[in-house]
Length: 167
Image (cartoon, rainbow, N blue to C red; front, side, top):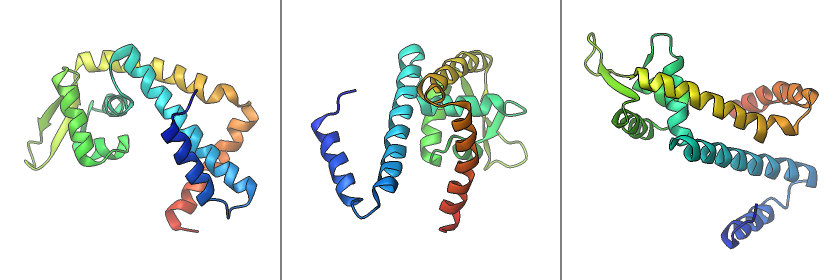
């Protein structure tokens, strides 16, 4: 995939900034960043091209569809989709406009609002899920052996723990 001049300049600046890192650490870090960016962009493009739904909307719709009762508090929607509360609210509004989700008030606490899946939303979520997992397989897992996948599965929790504790 060809990079624009701006992307090339940004990559060069990033590499220059990281020059103090040993070559293997620099390659690992930059590789992670580039792979993450490429995979997320590809998954987003797949969903938009096939269903007109971006990855952020898929994450919201999928999370609500997977909820035990078919609805989540708006704060939980944002958390499970890894979106800011305001971004999650905008995505829910768009999905609501398309008839895929609906907002419901909580009878016990008027401050609480739920996002609930509709039948149309549940049907689309199933189709989106298949496409998304095909994309994950094609864009990520197909490049790795079973042993490498198991190794990553073991390594990511350590990275996440270190990032949370700063150690």
